[in-house]
Length: 246
Image (cartoon, rainbow, N blue to C red; front, side, top):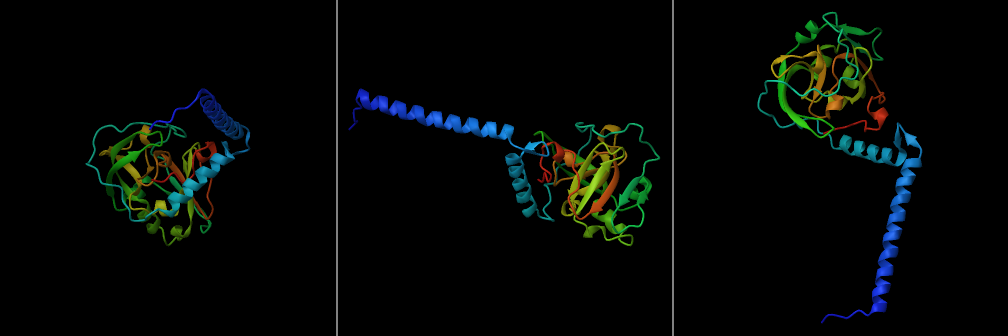
């Protein structure tokens, strides 16, 4: 049986709906206005920064050291180029990688030939950009963990919690946690899709990892500074999350 609604009740219902929507609209508007006028934390309104920090904490807590990205078929051909911040076209054969830590009396410097002398590994997986696109890639180089262990007589680099990785000219820099650096699919990469890195892809050496979005895969690596506290991060200073894990 369908209950009939008289005109008076119908008007009451419409007024109630109108008031409900008005309250929702006002609440939403106030919330957006609050975000726009609230204090910022690294160029992001503090409520959104809190959300970002909570997301980072979730991914940190759920990181698995031996969880590997699925292996993809070996790739050849060109890889998409995205992001040239901090790149220096003048970098050539005189390039060196500088490594610093609290336990070193002076910085260590490495030529590309020294890095290539370490065991070479090849990994194929899906490279993911924070902008939403992805592409399968095959990369070759040295596991970051092998590089650190090759220098264990200089310092126990694995004891540090973080590292600041910077381009040769310092124009781009990323914060990396040690657990991610020690992951087996984190490489100091000098070949991509079977060929030497091009300048646009970070010649002569870059970081490649399956456990972070592309913005963390810094190109044209010039220095690594180890420490116990989270260092600066280019995109975190501009509103992105600091961890950016996968």
